[in-house]
Image (cartoon, rainbow, N blue to C red; front, side):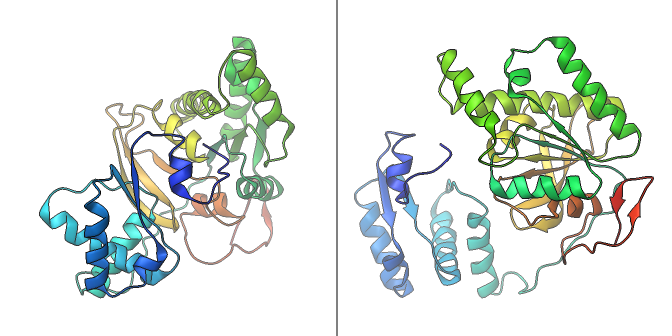
Length: 313
């Protein structure tokens, strides 16, 4: 469902579900808690399948967090959303004295090299890729035809061998299918999918799954410790190919893009450090922040470490 062309989420979600959708809008959320609770009960009396909450301000988040916490005391509550769900709950718990007001910023140790696989068409990710390429990362464009089945197995093997060679030389590597929303590969991918009778939405699953397989092969062949999957659809489908069953947050690099420890029944994948990044998440130097395991402050631009190919703080 990307790009999103409708600001009213009820209309947008109606393209994906036949469920009825109720709404607690921003005017509702401006009310005092007693009135807000009454308004929620009135909306729920209509028995919608989904109750959607709008949000504009930090105060709205806190109010939503309180409603979610109170509703969950009655019965298990199924909540769907971005990291805004967690922000809402944490904001309420802090205001209620259940959590400290300051976050404990955990940092991770730096790693010598990083693998990034990107199926994102976002301009934000495009800028991040360009920043990394200018600062010593090796970039390898992955033709969508290679991932979607038009290319031979030999071509795929050659690309993996090139990535492996860079990694063994100590360089960080970015495998990317597009460089921003104007990349010509996007139209080519859509044309290919149409020729196969597939909707363009299928690109996320097809590209993400293959990028996940490639990431897994490179981790196993090179002993990589840390990777990034860039793109919301890419991340979801890629991680399914990596034999992982759980993630535990290690460090908060940026909101919505934490560094996690992966758990796997495969000893070679257990302990892999991974970031699953939405297309619009993170500053230009995001990948280098992940490599360094740090969350605060922009990286400087001092001398280049020629052996590793990275800018160091």
